[in-house]
Amino acid sequence: VWEELDTKERLEVLQTVANVECAYLGLPYMPQVAAAECRDDILGQYDYAEHTIVFNLSHLPHKNGPEMLNALLHECQHAYQFACVEIYQAAGEEYRDLTGFRMFWQAEKWREEFLDYEDGSSGTEEDDAAYRRQACEIDAREGAEREMEKYLEYLGY
Image (cartoon, rainbow, N blue to C red; front, side, top):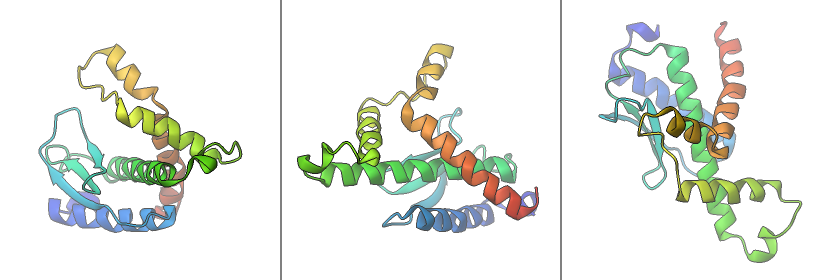
């Protein structure tokens, strides 16, 4: 069915899945899914300030359903990470220092990486490797893979 959908319909499907996924992740908001012109190497990206997941308008018509689902789930993981960082920053020092709050360990690392984010934009292998080895990207890929298995099973793949 995905191949038969136009861009507007594809974005509506992606928005529905984003709503389900972000509710499952416990986010206090639902990111808006949109399409826009982006750098050619970007399929999708999460914008924390606007709470949007933006897909590359050039790629959207050419990607298959599972590829777009995986990209969406990856960006939903980034939305979750930013929400965790927000909670971490709002918490008092007495909570940030508790060694049992594993979420805060991750949130602190994600915050540091978001402040000095490696976007891989130069196109070199070294730059791409720096992008891929960031904890926020590793965690987003792993989270998307976990969720992808559930969706593909549900869809009968």
